[in-house]
Length: 84
Image (cartoon, rainbow, N blue to C red):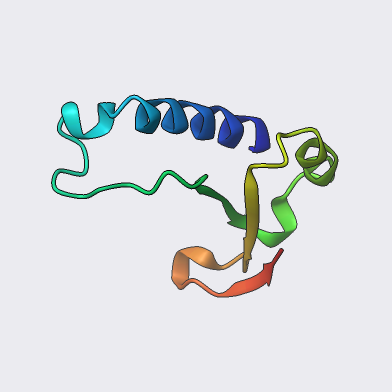
């Protein structure tokens, strides 16, 4: 999950830098900030792989990552169990 998030992050940053999102019809009428986006990793709290923290240390420090751990019964209603 962290590597996939980093890939999405870099792609979105490149599209924003080149002004492509609006040109291609995405987010019509909205202006995106030039500040780095925040990456949210959301999943059941007990299902985050133990290596997630280790992998996050290797990402560009410019990437702000927030992990949201949900209860295992997330399908019946969202309940946040942890936020890091």
